Image (cartoon, rainbow, N blue to C red; front, side, top):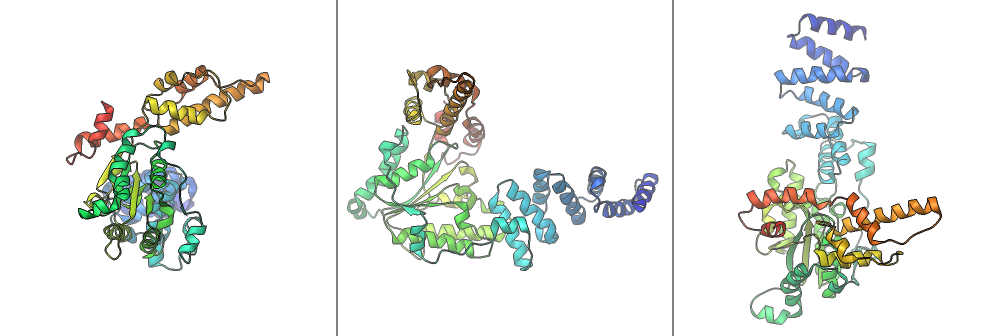
Length: 430
């Protein structure tokens, strides 16, 4: 402590002495009580030496201890080669991505550490990512519940008539008339991409599509594919495609596909690029036949998907899944109120007051109304049914979650839409 105070006094007397500043930074980094002073010193030093890796490492550690997760990620993304950092600091970066729920980057960074230092351990990262044993064969996949035949069809999907019409024309009719399509050289299967704001039923419509064609449904999440060991992610991806090919007709559904198929130009690590290359090879059916396999991807951010995925023969059919229209919202509200006490609901009036609501927003609105009724019932001892008034009051409280999405999507539709794939967004906004 005394040495730190002496260095502070020396630096105060000679504020341009970079050597003294560096000595003080190296001493202070081991004491938490100096975080604020240390941060200021680091900022000063980085202005003169912006490429100094040691300074950035110390600043990353300081920010992490202060809970400044986003700041840590900003610094990490400014560093072109993370391998220049110590494994402990790289683990900090992985944990920051983990806290931001960016599992792909968290796994990728941690995988690189383990590749360089196989014996490295970190309790938090190990708990999140250490590999569970891979399922031994396809039968275990069947037992796991990953693979099933949905018992829902389009008739169970409220509204979404235009989306259902497109899927029927592009997917279902070819499967029902396979011989006719084959006579024109058209294969049955292929890929479609569903995109739109969150909570609008992309997963539900994918399951209903499988139900319409009596196909096996395989629902794949990010955690089912990504693996911290090099090469295992590609093997996992191949395994699920093989499962789909062995159980035709089948629907292979990838939720949040932009996390698996991010633009390769945005990825620093080769591991992520290898997964994308494997995905593209599986879509092309390079070593296997994908006929009879329908691959459906769902994403809230199609602009983050590598353009190679939209090449003909891959996800060349792109369908916008908008928030439900008023008629659809009436159906959804009726469905969501089933089993709940309600009376004299003016469904049309409620639907009109829920502009831009997604199906998830409707659910949230009803939950707010129910919570208010339960709160009053606890005070009065008299439970009341859900009414039009209680739903309208809840609609005033809950703001549509789709507004932020459309704000971002509109920019892409206006300024990054040469191919016209976002025309449906502009049409909806009109």
